[in-house]
Image: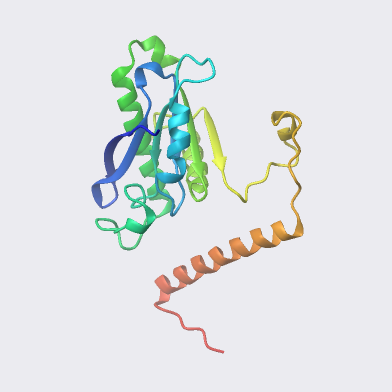
Length: 223
């Protein structure tokens, strides 16, 4: 049975309380901090079961993880069918803005974690994992790159980055086979490549239409 997470608000562009962070686990008993960012248009539901499992000590472990879950602005407070999208920017949010939202969620997560840490020794042992899914993978890459290149961007640099996406395949030169204990991963088929290409073309065309319409008004293409 799922336990109810603690819910906190944090500021996002245009809304001082629009960001929502759901926290699972007990900070005092956790040395591993995980922040999950779901991709558009996912809300809390897809990750809630896994978040509780990560936050629960099991299999002989002395402690669970301290898990924070956030989503793209506007998608993290209700189920998909109940979304009202009130109080959010009508023009949407840029990837840079969402990246900053995730940074602020990380700050809040560590702020809550620090309140229950008993000693500086425990805090020094804390590891930070950033886990992202689907469109959140873009945010994960932006976050980690800015955390490395810009010292002032965030005080919480992830120790690990976990990317969950159906179109992501291991690099051919990686040792993923050894990491999976010898389990084979199927190679891309022609169907996989065509699906991936059509997926990317659709979003590239959407992006192009948006850019041109903003630059010169609505464009109507006629034969």
